Amino acid sequence: MPERRVDDAFRLQMEGYGLTTANILYRMPDHPAILQTYIWQDYDLAPKFPELERFLDFWNRELDGPIFKVEVAHQRLVRPGEWRAVSGLFKLH
Image 1: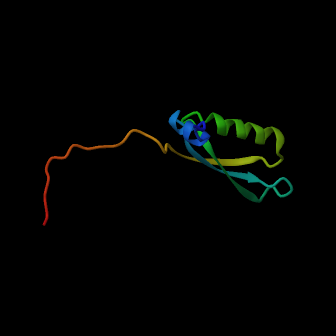
Image 2: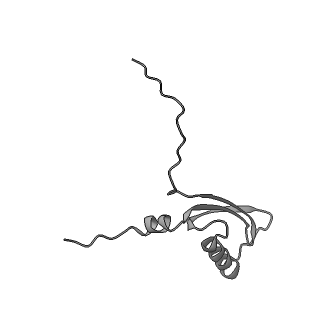
Image 3: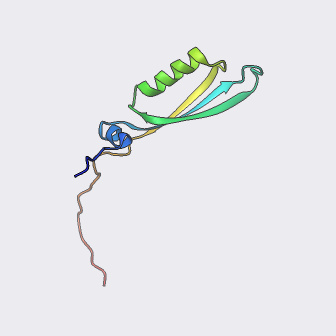
């Protein structure tokens, strides 16, 4: 029987990672009055966002365009099921 491999994205979700999207606004190196946008997306752990921090550290160290603003959205895709107790049941014919 062939060995089954678990998808890395699914494994991360099971470990508590959620899909994180960062909208990064940065200044153009040659035209600092102009803002450019860059969208970054990866699985990360809220609220500290170590993967995003690692990427932003890389950006500040290696790229010329200084960051103006970062907006972050985060959603855990795998989480415990939500349920509510039912107080009644109605049947329609």
